[in-house]
Amino acid sequence: MKQILIYQDYVDHHNNAHLIAALKNARPNDNISFCDAHDIIEGHLTDNVDLFIMPGGADLYFCEKLNGKGNKNIRTYVENGGTYLGICAGAYYGCARLEWDIGGKFEIEGDRQLSFYSGTATGPIYELLEQNSVEKSWDNIARLSLENDTTATVIYRAGPYFSEPKDNNVEVLARYKNIKNTPPAIIKCAIGSGHAVLCAPHIEYTPALYKKMIYKNANPSYIWQTNILETYKKEWSQDRDPFTKILETVLKQS
Image (cartoon, rainbow, N blue to C red; front, side, top):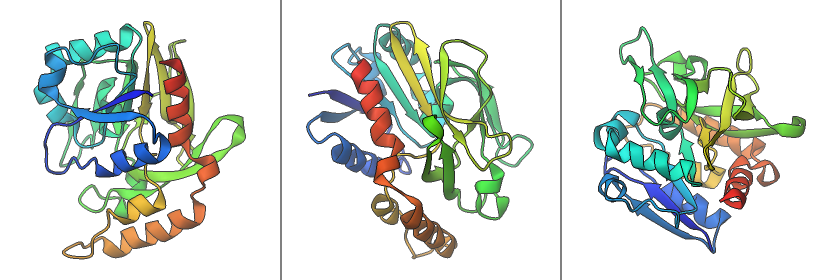
């Protein structure tokens, strides 16, 4: 039985119920639990943890609580043989530099302490946003090119693309198939004795889980999201589910 730990910071829009459901579907016999910044700072992230997941949300909240000792402890955990899986915001957070909506109303840029990947995470991918606008829905379909020329359809929610790797310790696991220059979408970085997998799209969503995230009440993007769901139902395949495959890969290495 593997020990999987998910970070939480109590921000209202950081809803990880879908992530728990996806993990339980993929790894029904594993022990899945949460930790917060206090736990990490106090040293609870030990070699007993097989996989540490930094989920989606907004990385400025991660910075606020983890900069300094928290990030040092996460980095040490990975260097000593642990595995970090960053999804969307967690993927931005694992890079040396973040660029968000540069030149736009919500611009964020700066260096990040974990620096598992020495390159830059840049987002959002405007062509995947509703009406190419950060002020509309961030949801869309992303089509990935995986190893052996296989493809997968996943949910995109304003995650980044990564700059092209220059280091030998970085492996590109997936690229955006229908984005100009097919930039990296999922990368794996060897860090000391451990690994960090940075995943820009939300590969944990099945169509059934994504459906649960759509509400009609006071939602101007309801039709947009409903159309995404219908496309996702048609294109998603359990046989080409990158979430399960990545979990199997990283937990074998732990």
